[in-house]
Amino acid sequence: MNKGMGYALGFLLVLLVVALGFYVAYTSFQSSRAALLFEPTVVPRTSTPTRLPTTAPISTPIPSPSATLTVTLPVTPTAVTSATPHGQAEATAVLAEPDPSLTPAPPTATVPSASSFAFRLAGPPAPEHTGDCCYIRGTVRDAAGNGLQDIVLQMTDDWGNLYSATTKAGSEAGLYDFPLSLRQQAFTYRLKIVDAQGAVISTQVEVTFDPAVAPSYRVDWKRSY
Image (cartoon, rainbow, N blue to C red; front, side, top):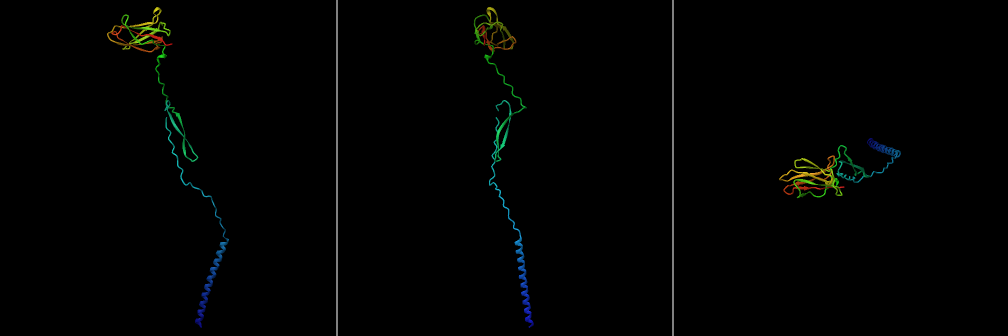
């Protein structure tokens, strides 16, 4: 009898433990459900995604400006750039600025033409086979062919010696002559007409005097205007 009661009490204790376990589990489930029901619902925020470029922009290389001299004045080219809507720099203009430290080159001297002189040759120098020896002579006339008096001529030889002659007046108006020493070989003389101040007013002519060819040489002049 006592043994049977022991089994009954043990079985009763097991039932109580099981029932207590179910009660505890049920109570915890109800508490968790209530907490979930009263928990505020958080609405997730939506944002517009930023669209990233799929490919990187390709930069256009800037061409280097080329320098050009027309010179006269040296210049320093300066490139001016501007930005395109795509952020690419491109060359738009080249400004040329004179360098203030440089001095312009002086103008090149020009040799006056024969037509710019007051007198020119009336014809090429020529040997003269008449008359006595030894002269370089001729006439100086105006544009109409009239002899001009008091016109000064200068002549130099191979050693730089200077000779001067003046045209005659009266019936021999316009005539001049340079007497030469008698020599047995040829020498070169250079003739020109000068004004009262010594400035050259004609082209210069070279005459090679050779007494073996002719006793005299003739050089005639004429006013250009």
